[in-house]
Image 1 (cartoon, rainbow, N blue to C red):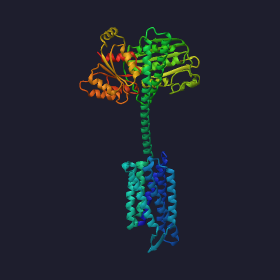
Image 2: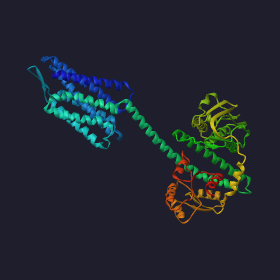
Image 3: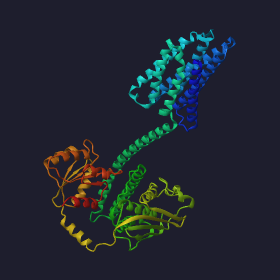
Image 4: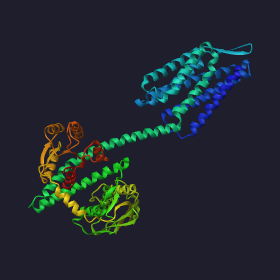
Length: 610
């Protein structure tokens, strides 16, 4: 009856193990080293339990001494299987505790193989005898104390691995390992006085294998864990990229601020020779091109990271289109192009949308047409379909330029790609403009289409839905604006400019000189703090990325001063995603990205100084 009970327990253990194995092997797996080790544990477990069941069947069905050889052989195989399974568990424990430390797995796998081969040879060589007394079979021999000592050593070794990785003991990977150590140690010790409990070793192993499956080796769980790790690594890489882009933006925009600012000052000098004026203008144009490239790279980074937000507010589409059309006109110099703009009269005076990104779309489409057209015509046309409060903007840019080959149209909106690039080495740009345009249009719920014939020209058509804010222009608008302009007076207003770069200080001073400010400069955060403790200013222009105390740190210290209420503008080359929101959230009164224009800084100062 006892032998029958043992057979039933082992049979159930085998069935459970086979079911787990089938589910495990039929699922898509990651094939990581620990997965392969778990596979070996499953296969070894099935073979070991099966040999145990076979041994029980042979013992229960016969007592003829001719079967002694088969019983001894199966007994040795069963015990070798137990040792192999426990050693695989130990190796699994060793691997999961060391895999983050650059473990050379192949070397240790060979050590495991050699250990088990030597162990098998020893266990086949050690004495094992069978006795039949009154129809009852008993076994004895040196193989039993050897197995007990070896298993004890392996469990101690597993415990050491766990203790050495004690800081990660709460991780779920140790749940089945700890359970195995506890259960197997109890059974191993109990078997000294009660050998009959040995049959519980197989169910104990199966319980642990099952727990391993549901905690750490389930392929679905592993897949999710791997995806979560990949996501975490991607986010970390994205943060590193954002930090790099922020640094790159600052490093490029800082000298550009000086180049553009000083060149514009040269252009304003009276009686300047035509050659010098032309050279200064070329410097400004080249700087703006470089600034556009940097802006495109930053924009595509924002889109990729999902940090680019569409911020809607009332704006004048006509003004933005006319301004963009006029700005791009300077790119036509040296080209014989009939450059035309047509704006439908029924386009509402004020729309609700993302003014900045609408303007970016317009600029990308128009500048792209100019780049690839040397002669002929460029027609920029804007129409709309109005229905209730909705306005569907329809913007088309048609040129007679190089056109696009049919097979290349699908590649047109790919990032960092210009078509027939080997023939277009004189064309400026990164190949990001149209990719950004497509993303921006789709983020606004619109569409972009292109028709082109190679050698004849291209037509880009963009449709963007907007909301109507104000259908017609108020008649009193100009009069009100003029009266506001007349009230504002900067004369004798005190301004503090904080910047560690002497050239940037020079540019800011020259811009503000035209407004008749009383200007004070500081080249460090500490100097700015000292000046603010002893003086009162009407406005402070604060650079952010300075050695020592950063501008935002200086600003927070200023806010702690009693009775400090001076408006502070963040004047910085940090123009990455959400920079403006970041500084406004810190408490800055406004934000200006370098390089800045005279009109831009005047507009900000007018708002803050009454």
